[in-house]
Every structure is written in structure tokens, then in C-alpha cells.
Image 1 (cartoon, one colour):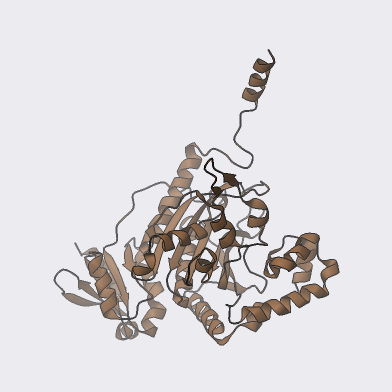
Image 2 (cartoon, one colour):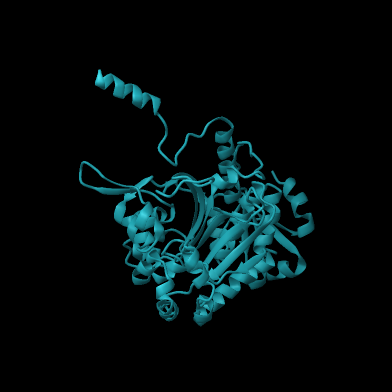
Length: 434
């Protein structure tokens, strides 16, 4: 009798785990429509799909994300298999992606490799509106190149996805936290600053001071936020190379008329970031009109070593929090639809052309003309070789002369014929291509 009573009690309490939920009906189509639109935009910019396992080796996650972060210290779901393996549910996509890059020898492929991926991630966080323990992210990543234009590419592509979803008032919070050449000087100054304020620091941040002082800048403690207002800023400590890289990223943003704010305390919540870090904010995105952070990311040139590689892999990415978008009043409720294959390969030559390249790609994207590209390449031969390998029927060549003349060269890859076309006539010309 006792056993039956217990069974009835369990039946009455059947529910999904705390912080997790079922996605059904219109909500499901909302997610599906967003993911299809995000994939479509990603393809326009030259990204390809990848899907990594939800479970990874625990040391990959802890080693990649780093000590002193909330994720590693409090939020990872771990388990031990019957075979004795220690696994963890992925709390984000980046460390698993780097593992896949190394495991499959992707460094032998033409660099950089560009991926998009999406799916559920898991963190044992405090559930609240718009924040779940199982939540969905859409990521864009470029691995194998350290050029500043790759930072600008992932920012612009991510913002394009958000705008297609209905966001209308986006801005960027951005910072540079330097690299191994200049960060130690900054960390020393930051540590000294916190030691002077040690008596005012909450216990959790005093502990972080021992393991990872940079994480204190990301603290959610109100007292620490006050202390952080006068903390030294990382930009003042940048070496010449990092300063140049950051300046170039900002120039690309300005060229694309992207509003940005340099936030000296922005470090993001993960330890693998280096140089550029950023967050994409909808100024009036919250239900009460308050700013809402929709995406974030940055450069992670040292993550490969943290997960066991013998050499560094320069990389940069952005992660979009999909749950917040789907539940926002401005979301367009995108309907699922079929994706398209690229029929244009975009080739650029020279500094002036490279600077204007993303704007031309944006023109093509808005006209629903998907492309492939390798913006980090500089030679005509290498870019044409990739276009031929991918069997894309047409290429657009944009060089210094074309940048001055506001024109492009459209080449038929099968018979090598080509025409020079003014930019204001390009869309009309492309519509006539078969």
C-alpha cells in the first residue's frame, strides 16, 4: 500500500527538471524559424555547419573555460559513466568546437575555417525570466586566422542575424584585454588595485583574486561593481600589436556604421578570451525598455593550448542567446523556410577593397544572394582556387581599381568570361545570370 501511495505522489509531481522546459507548437516554430534565418545569414557570410556532442570530457570544459569562472566553479553538470569516464554537459559551444578542430586535423585545411552551430547548452544557474538551465545558443566562429577583419566579420554577421530577427536598436560594448605580451602588466596593476580594496571585496571575489583576478571585473556583486568603476583599464596596457589590432576592429565598425561603446570593464565570463571582447546590446530590448544583452563573444587565440594542443590556433567567435530573442516583444516570429546554396564567390584584393568588402556582401545579403568568401586571403590566385574547388559558378572580383570606380568584375567560372559592372547596377546584372 505504501508503494502505491508513493507512485501516485510521483505521478502528481511529473514535471521537467527545474530550469528546463518543453518547446512546443508556436514556440517550436519560433525557434526553428530563427535557426533557419540565422543559418541563412551565416551562409551568406561564408560559414559552414558543424554539430558537436552535448557531452564532452570534463577536463576539456574545465581546462578550456578556466578556474575562477562561475561556469566552472558552480554551473557545470557532470557525470561519471559506468566505464569510469568523467563527462560534462557542454555549458557553451566554443571549447567543443576547438576540440573538433584539433581532433579532425582542420589545421591542414585552407585557413581560416568558418563554422556556425546551434543547439542546447547547460548551466546550473539560478532560473529566471529569459534564463534557463537548458538554453539555446547560435554561434559563429572563425578559426585559423588572427586578422582584425575576422573580428569585424563575426560581429557584423551576428548583428545581421539579430536585425533579421527584429532587433532595431543595436549597439556594441567592446574592449581589448590584450595578449600574453601585454596582459601580465595589466593583471599585476589590477591585482594591486584589488588588494588595496581587499577589505571591501565580497568573499567570492577575494577568492577569485587568488585564482583569476580578471574575473572580478565580471562580478555580479553590487559592492564589487562599485569598486570596479575605478579599476585600471586594460586598453592603457596594450602592446603595439594589440593596440593596432583593436584600432583596426574599431575602424571596420565605423566603416559599417555600427554604433559601439568602449567598456573598460568588459572581460566576458570565460577565461579563454584574448584581445577583442564584445557584447551586442538591444538598447530598448527588455520588457520595461531597459537594455538587453543578446550576444557576446571575442577572440580566443590561446584556447587551443588550454584544451591540449601543442600550438596556438587564432580564433574569434560570437554566441547569440536565442531564448531571450524568442521571448522578446520585438521578435518577428520568423517562419521556417528552405535555405539556399551560394552561387557567387566574393574575391577582394588590396586594403581599400578589403575595407569596403563587408558593405558589398551586405548589399548581396539583403538582396538574398548567398555567397562564399575568404576575406582573410590576399592573393587573387588563392581565392580563385578556392572558388573553383567549391564549384561555385560565378565570382565577384573587387580590387583597388574597382573600389575607386565603385564597380566589380563578375566572372563566369566555367568559361572565364567576365564583365565590369557598376555597384548600382550589380543586383540587376546578377538577376540575369542563370
